[in-house]
Image (cartoon, rainbow, N blue to C red; front, side):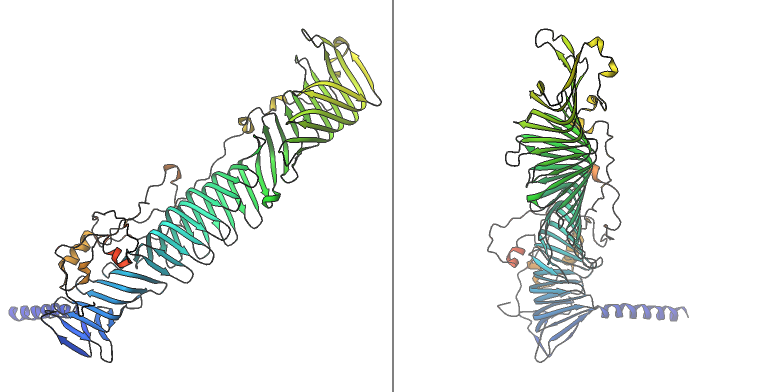
Length: 627
């Protein structure tokens, strides 16, 4: 009974092993079969008469005009109009191909065309590993999908995650943009591209640059970090990160942003900016600061928010909320400001104030006018409730001039004349012109208008016109409360004396945490040690694959780590589901740097000299001398 049971088990086990072995055999169908042991020992030559040769093995089907079949090695070489198909996931055509059923490895060359449900690949030489479901080229290739054409010198396709990894001279072209990069990972299902190394996204009216970025080729939006910038016609925007939407010509920059405007020689900095190209507008906030060069002297404007609008030839800048101005010889404050760079008008609105040395000027509105040709200050106007205050030389009090409207004139950017009209009032501390500058008295005068002449921003002469009524008081005869005109407020402690003072009293802005860009998946080499061992152990006589130097081409080194300051939690929507291939050894083969000086070489010739060869590779015969 025991012997019978053992016999049954042995029979079943032997049968299953035999069936498994049989299932691995390559099946062939051919109109004509030929044997030529001298040239192809152990092989059968298959040839087309009416129908192409058909070959099938474990889900892969091959059609061709001629083939050499090595039955014992489960290896086939296919020639002429080769078509290789793997279910509904992959179809490949070429002039020549070979397939090894033991190593599950295919190799094709000459007019190789690979088609998947979502894209096509054209190249000169292609390696396909069925075991890991990966395809690889290193002599230049072109991938096309519904909206993009992608080219690169080196490319690798991971079928399980539907991802291409492109390296060296990578380019994406579509109707809206052209993308150039050193390395680019592209996901075929959603059209997402991840950029590594120096990269540009060039549109019709702008160019985005970064050294790490993300770009959605379907909705035409991108996100860039690391030396990110976007260039327009006359404007360049820098930032720690830049979001870009080419469909609506919109960009936003975050943290340490800088906007250069070559049209009017200005720079605006801050920590958040929005650019609307179609509207020719830029919005900047979070410590916004504009700097414009005027006659070799920059004028700085700081406010909570700055907005620049208009074409290059007609730029208008508006500042809102706590505006502060600084120039080497002038500073000021107001609630808001309007700068028209075409007319040269600068209008300060909402409690405006200007300081120039010991002079303080206030009113309901202040307009500063510059000469647009010379870029020098020309004049200023203070509308309604004009008030000019100058601290007394010995700080005993304040010289004051009050009226409805004030007009000031500049020469070489220095104010030299001030005219005040309508119901003017003055208080002046009159002193001896020499010696100890002893106080003579305090002069209070009413008149219809006044003219002041200044030298080096100091009042030297005063002229009163019409309906003059004045009294010179001794200091002891004029009480303290009578030494100030109605509406007098001295704000000298607020005076801005340096660029640093523009931010006085403000807390540093809280910077937004920058979203990171996921680093590329560190896969083992396509020709890693395990794959090379598999190919070596299952090699077959006559394989042209053995003529190739089986090692990955040298990649651009673009996988540097993110800076610690820019290493935040990754955005879930940007980060794709990445599955590292674990079917091969973690050990990597040594890479060899190669730069081919001979630009006349074909892709196939270049491909064959960029890597190293298997041991004991032999030059084998082919069906015809031309093959």
